[in-house]
Image (cartoon, one colour):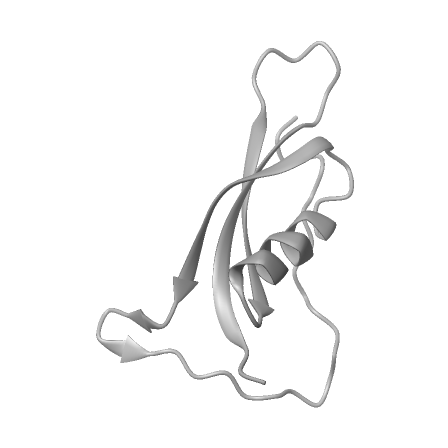
Amino acid sequence: MIKNLYAVLLGGKLRENHLMEDHHLVFVVAENEKDARTKAKKKWKDAESVHVDGTQLIEKVDGYQVVLERSESDESSFIIDPDYSL
């Protein structure tokens, strides 16, 4: 099973009575786009009605090929800070 890196743009409402939605760009490792969308939405627990505005498979950046290697740790250091948009 081949894993790929995806950038996923999430939209959601952080605050009640807020006219605009907030957005966060998250990165996930997934087998396909559908799996990437599901995993990405789980990263933004504090937003109401989280939805995906777009996804992009990341294979090359500025002439460099993206290669994924398994880490010894399963933990991610990525956290969405709900206070960021306040």
